[in-house]
Length: 479
Image (tube, rainbow, N blue to C red; front, side):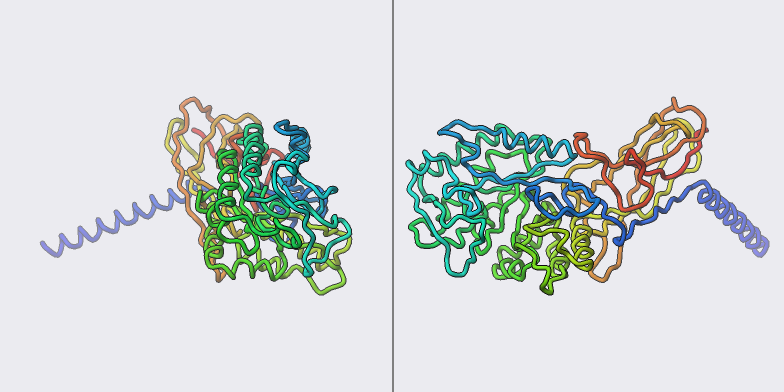
């Protein structure tokens, strides 16, 4: 009797196992799996916001067939304040309008001292009468270019009147531009040569020295207060570290600007200060690191931009000025290829690896859309974009259903480790389809869009992008 019972239970187990197996097979058969084809780095770049190259003051390298997502400009103080307390921001507004016409966002910095300015004085004339200052020349280590003036007027940075008038200026700028959709970021300037938070290479004047810490902190605080809604970028300040650390410790959303890109000094000025190095090594997770080349490129020397490519990877650089006196026509083919590769390596690069969804559904039913995402770049995304699924009746253009994914691309850090092993992030989104859907075959597509509607649809590093910025994933039958 016991033997018979064991046989019966064994047979029942086989039966249940077979049923479970058939159920699993049916479940798999009812799922569609779409595997996108990745765009390789050898292909033309995939331009996107706050990554790759940006347009540097309209005279950088014009990479053929490449659009720049941001346009960056600097202004002298005396361009904006025509007389004491009278401001004319039309030059900035005109540049913003020009950038907007090309689908770009705008970024800018204000300078008080600039040796490339057409005049020795870069501040309003009244300021030279009310603020102590002196004319400075350049030290023996600096080779003055033919475009620079022989000396510049440098204010006493610690002067109370200088700080008061600087505060009035940046407050006026903030009232006009803070939080505007057209602004990609505000580059904190005002202090130092070129607004770069250093006073190199001035000498032979009473005001050539650095400002004290209290002054630097005050200049930082006034700009942060004037632009609370906009992205802020802080210059690394060459050897200066106190002001840099003071600014970055104010908020994890404050990004970094570093000059002398593609020079050994770029790495040295970071590595020689432990505080600065620590801040830069972690800041990329929450805010962009933006860089500018170190100067003119000599096509006859041995530079091939290999140092720049290594620096992009090492410091996780998001955005690179498209040039600083470089011209495309002076590059040989290797230099052209490598210069373009700098832009491809910089920033994020999103590659959806797989999408799973039901082949057929019932109206009003709950469905799961499972996706796997890789970020094969070096940074996350620094602007808010929404990942959304859409359904359209096959052959028709109108969207009949939309579902927002829970994936936050601002938190999708690089998924590739130092050995090159990629571990995609799996995202499961659950939706309930409306009862009002008609029976029929629907096209399922994906789109990543800017909720402010200013930016174009985000481009993924996969093939299949349509003219509307969407990606078709397959078909679903609604019963």
